[in-house]
Image 1 (cartoon, rainbow, N blue to C red):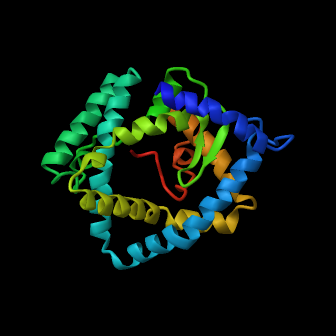
Image 2 (cartoon, rainbow, N blue to C red; image 1 turned 90 degrees about the horizontal axis):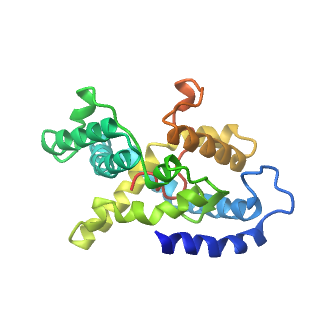
Length: 247
């Protein structure tokens, strides 16, 4: 973690050189750099990821898509539970442990979401949120190549999120790689309708993604206690070329 923070600190002067002379949003001083990365990610998405996700959603039966989503969601619940405990929320942590136990056994390794049917809610926590709960400021907004919307604080948490992903240790390697690709395409497919609407409605898609992301992350760190309605607390922003929030 110290190495990651040090690398981030070293990178900031370089990013500052890419920033606009007068940022329109104080939380986005690197807007020029971020817009370039946004355009790059968008091209990757339009050329590769979105077509793959569209084909996947078209030809794959709905129950298979649900099973794939549930399986990887169950893996993500493991790290979510750890972060709940790190954030001082033992009740939520034990709830997530129970989810993993039920779905991994009666849910056929997570393919069936038995826990949700039993009334046990699903959460989504990562180490960036944990750092936020510990009082670490978010720092400037960053658009990372391939990984998409982030902040300096969240970017510092990415390596640990990756190391904590159970799928990272799956053998043989070819099965791991196939699963990783399937996971990414399935996740992108769940946001196809949302991204299509955004592309049609947003005058400035970069600003829409940035503002929605920052609002959503703040809401998640505060467990939704930001005064917004339930409908407004839904995930407003689809994932970029690669989604990192679920390790």
